[in-house]
Amino acid sequence: MAHQPKGTSAAKLPLEGLRIIDLTTVIMGPYATQTLADHGADVIKVEPPEGDVMRNGVPMRNPRMGAISLLLNRNKRSVALDLKKEAGRAALLRLCKDADVLISNVRPAAMRRLRLGEEDVRVVNPRIINVALVGYGQSGPYAARPAYDDLIQGISGVGSLFERSGSTEPRYVPFAISDRIVALAAAHAVLAAVIQRDRTGKGVSVEVPMFETMAQFVLGDHFAGRVFEPDLGGTGYNRYLTANRRPYRTSDGYICVLIYMEKHWHGFMESLGRLEEMLANPRMATHTARANHYHEAYGMVADILLTRTTAEWLELFERLDIPCVPLNDLDAVIDDEHLNAVGFFETQEHPTEGTVRYTGVPNRWNGERLSIRRHAPRVGEHSVEVLREVGFSPDEITKMAADGVTVDAP
Image (tube, rainbow, N blue to C red; front, side):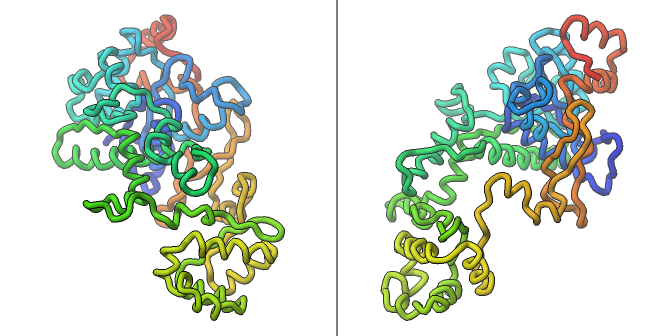
């Protein structure tokens, strides 16, 4: 781990010196490498001369610089290479020679056709960590199937949970939840592989499958009775699956509240003068009883909350120390006083995109946030810089650009 990004402070960069060759596209892979780049890794995003397809996601001020792409690619360097050309393939192998990690969500079979499979990369760097982000474990019958966030939400059971919890039909979560969860699993796998490599001196191959990762995630809450043999009551955690677990309507809006612990229920019902009524109801009197009748318990709360304003309920719940928040829409999240007070957003002047506001790195190191050191690059913005670092001469780079192998976008 000998590479140091320019203009950084070792005290603030946990992954300083880790070089990652990033062959990922769309959201899952780029979010995994964004997470690593945010923590100091030197991530070299290798993309085709036309750029990663996600660059075209609107809105945008300039072509191939869409909003999601800006967020996914900050703190990275971009090298444009046409890997279908021999010179592009050779350049990628030269990048891998001195790298710690190669991460890709290109299907393994396609990587082998390009002669960039694990065995090809290990010839130039036996210590490299080869991370394959795949839709399905490659030893199973779904290995060759395409995988996207919507499909994985469906096959892992996420979509069906909406219907079980009261929706009229299955639905998808309205953001790329599978991509982003699996991305974080991939980032963890990369770090574990680096520790193992540094202990043993040998590179390792890591496969991170979307389906299995999301199945573990979903079943962690909803395996329920099928954990046991014989079955002790089927699947699903009933508290999560009641239609009455939702933001509650008030007389003038919505509120999110979790009346959960015994002291919460007692304090809430006592403040309404209804504690004796609750204690007299065998389905509501104790935590265990309510746990078996969450739909009824939360339904009662829903009816009660209709009777006052959001502000009135927030004041009461805060006084009773009952967890609660208002229901934010997306604009309210962006304008939230807490996020702005802790410096969650970072505004920078991008050389081509003007003023850009990034979401920051959530965690803190020794009380400080990790900064955004590099703006999101244009396609091939660092091609010349990086190719020179690995030994290409100016004449070789000029020829590669003339032949369409790379793009020079200073």
